[in-house]
Image (tube, rainbow, N blue to C red; front, side, top):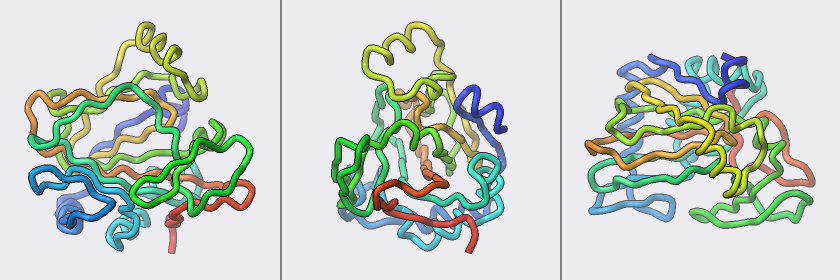
Length: 235
């Protein structure tokens, strides 16, 4: 798995969560609208700050998640951000080609190489140097089947090895590399490097496509900067 992710930037694992775990997670995600959620027609389709939920923090510390994260980041890794996405008939959006280049921190501290800064759902975010992002891992847990007609993630293999890419470089990658469709079954996980170029189209047949997006790191930030969340793999 380590060599695969280093080379391509992603990996798909089936049967990570069992039916009991899936049902418990779906029950815990019956969220009410607040500053960290987005809803249409009374249905929440996105939520930030999931690591504030005890069930999500417990999930991070399960053997199923540890077996995904430890081989790449080690036993001292910790979750730093959790987000829910639910692409459905009321919220069927398109995501342009991009890299995930922002991290959540506790407060703004002017630091060389970090910026610009922003606020998302009341949390300070900043774009760190590429070296920070290269040492991170994203785990996307699928609570529903995600097939070719349901707006799956598309990736450009190997693009994570070239640092932060501007619009011109992204356009070149799109011309030179065929996209790979990431179909993931219910209970499966997509592992991805944050700098991997990815996108998604609207679902052709909209239905729930619920994903718990977890970002992991294993190193402290410089100059007194602190990760906004720090949920260890072990108690």
